Length: 252
Image (cartoon, rainbow, N blue to C red; front, side, top):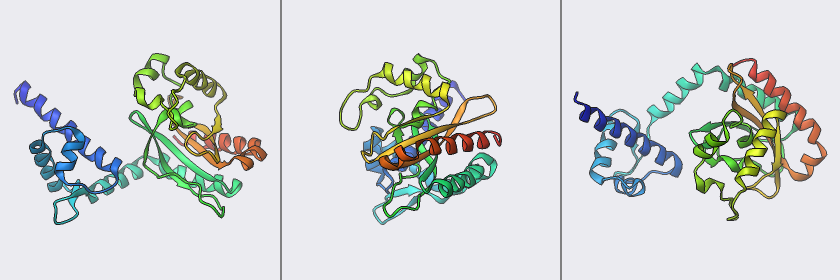
């Protein structure tokens, strides 16, 4: 292949991943023209790539209008990832233990590129539901985990990673980036962070790190609790999370 052909193929692969990521984000089927418009890509290119992705089972046609959504092969790839990386299997059991001992909603969270996502969740035994959409991508600075998952990065690497718009809070206020980085440094030193949720005015979020073999926080364990219960049981929840994080880190 010529260098130009290699670059063209690389751009096509990038665009194919853009299509998959877009459908994951919107969480509904769309027509190729809608996808092309959302991505700002040539419609003909998107049609060609969608055809290829359908042929390989990565997308499936969902209606007579030609709308497509993620295919079952994506699901099977996810299962293979889960089976290979033991951490996610171990995390499921740890979440069961956290929720059993605290009665609160617990989560296993990770970075997905320059976003934060809840990978696994166990709902607490409460009459009202406290939960997040598993797999939904969220601005890193809006989360308690976002103070731990970036602790190994320099100040400039943090600024380069996070899109400028993600420092704008849900209520429209601009986040103080220097203060955010200071929170990252403190959370890294203390192996813990908690605050009143930015996206839910009724809850308080706790997060503790899970370290990989290089000593980098590769995931977090979290508890999401009503503010009153969080205040009453603060020390207990912190201890439970840190103990669970240490336990899970030893399995990595």
